Length: 139
Image 1 (cartoon, rainbow, N blue to C red):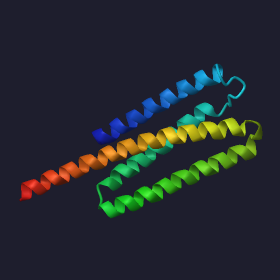
Image 2 (image 1 turned 180 degrees about the vertical axis):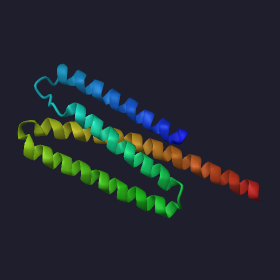
Image 3 (image 1 turned 30 degrees about the horizontal axis):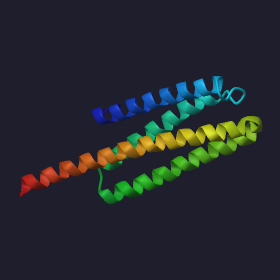
């Protein structure tokens, strides 16, 4: 596995661990009574989904810019669909804890999306710098 993708996935693991600890802390102090047993699995699921999509993003970054944008949009849509199905399934199976679950998922989704955007912008800047250097060398 490429060094860059390992660094990105390590960042996702750190982010997931931080979210898990913050969630446990909040559920044990301010939000007592709102804890739901699926919480640790939710964080693990988000970690796995985001890791898989980052590997896909990174591979598509090696292709043409148009194909990258298309792949990015399609994969983002698929990710949102996965989360929507997850929320719907959870609401149907555990309606008593559906609201804390949905709010937790929303907060985690926003956090992971912010990380996704920061990393993708960084990767795109690196790619542009490499391309600019190659153009300067060819002139």
